[in-house]
Image 1 (spheres, one colour):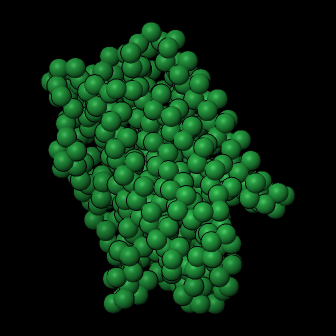
Image 2: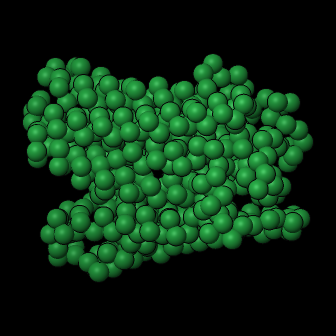
Image 3: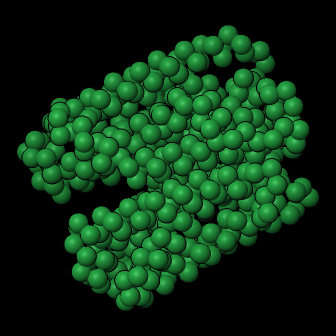
Length: 436
């Protein structure tokens, strides 16, 4: 299988070098259904977490039992995301988005029932649907802008919107719930999901009518093999898993840490959470813009390594500080550094994997689901064995492992002899056909 290193942009009538990268507003106008759908995908579990207590009361269950159902979603996302990864590239991204949105709408309707068993199905179905929806949307955004840096910027714009939604979703869902309750929020998610499914269905029909019908597709197992052959793809997926384990494990114990060391009650801790979320959003947005610019001052691979070094310093230093202002500064730095790594990893996967980008992003999301479990489990083990120094040691070791993987990514780049490898393991026509 040959490696195609050209930054094709046939659908736009030129190459990346001949046309300046489009601005964020132009991209947002072109991608508004994708951006809106990516935001809606985060709402069901946000509503579930925000209203866990009244949902538990409605179902006649304990908060602990109901909260445990959330793990079913992560398990479903891991299994479904891994199993269906090759199919993201074997069907049109719009059709995959339609399926994900319909499943998401159905899950929200089930969750609004308040029944314990149906809520369990809700958690499973949300995890499964988002494991298809999110990579399909991110790949669709990238396909819309070819195979080069514009594609990477489009993909990181989707992740930036998701991080902004995660930061703002709680107050957004709380306001309408004052009028129609949490059940009304879930019904609204159902309506939005189905409306967006209609939009993507219409887009898919138009693209199908324009298709040339000459796409080349790999078999199921060959897709995994081809993805493994892409320079640096496996280390990039490992970095995403490890960095998610560190960040989500850190967040799992963040409230307890601030309460224990600085006696911050939940009301004050909400500001800490906002600080962390805002830092992540701004850093993710700016990193996607800087690393995918026409003339970046630092390569995306090196930017990712810098983010990992900052993550290592901030997470280790955080658990040893006893001064609140410094702890807040390290909280902000840690969130920003993870946003840098996340944006760089997505950009590199999109640019290097070409027509396999859907499979890569699906496996990336599945790895992140696994990272959530790994981070919480290892962080808890470190806390139980050695207190906060134990947590610092565990998370620090995971970041060091991620830095080792980042070295492999850097070596893959230098070994290619290209200034910015953007390999495509398949004929570029398949990716371009979907971006028309």
